Image (cartoon, rainbow, N blue to C red; front, side, top):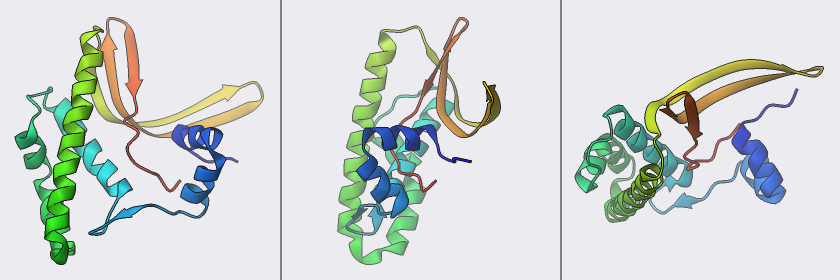
Length: 161
């Protein structure tokens, strides 16, 4: 049995060396202040999920900061001596999220697709030839238009399995 996500298979074929470091040795880059790149990815996902669930309100710095208020509070208490660094990290994260949303909006202006759901859990068994595949995981976002759907994977965090 081979276990892995679509993202992990894609990473293996794109760069097996990086795959070995991330998934074999489980190494990840940690930013000063103790926040890992994966943790930042989790925060980005959370903001994007909230944005879709709230029917895409105006996304600005205030929206992002209010959405991340609990993350900021918890992180500041875990790393009280890194307040300045954490402020900088959250400011950079906010700027990156605004840029990401601008890109999404630009792409969506050219299509008729609209957000349908976010964070959809998937458990699907498929038979192909004489093999059985089991797909488990989460779909970051599903958009729809008429009888068509599109799946979006935000690609912002590293997974350990």
